[in-house]
Amino acid sequence: MASNPTSSSPNNNRQSINSTTTDASASAELSAVVDELLNSLSNKFAGVSSEIFAKMDEMSRRLDNLEATLQSGAEGKDGRGSPTKQ
Image 1 (cartoon, rainbow, N blue to C red):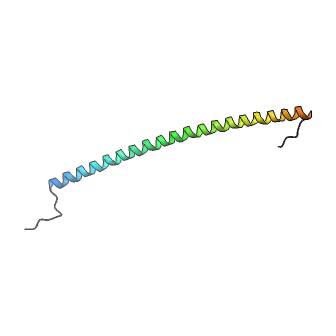
Image 2 (cartoon, helix red, strand yellow):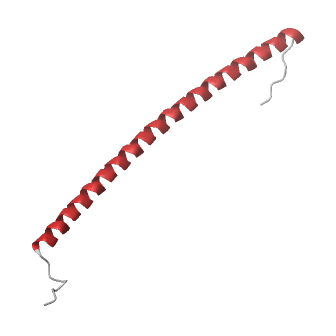
Image 3 (cartoon, helix red, strand yellow):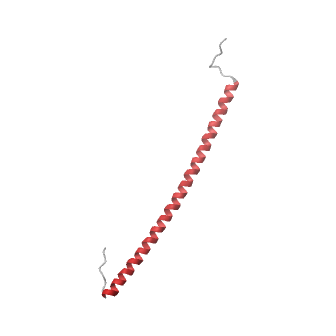
C-alpha cells in the first residue's frame, strides 16, 4: 500500500506551475530593478564626468589667463619679453 512518489497529483502540478510563474516574475522584477539601477548609475556617471570636464576647462582657462598676466607683468618689468617654454 505504499504510494508511488513518481506519480504526480493535480496539486503537485499546480504547485509546480505556480512556482515556475513566481520564479519567472521574480526574475523579471529583479531584471527590471537591475536595469533601473544601471541606468541610474550611468546617468550619474555621465553627470559627474561632464562636471569634471567643465571644471578642467575652467581651470585651463584660468591658468592661461594667469600665464598671460605673468608674461605681461614680466614684459613690463624687464622692458622685454621673457622666453616661453614650448
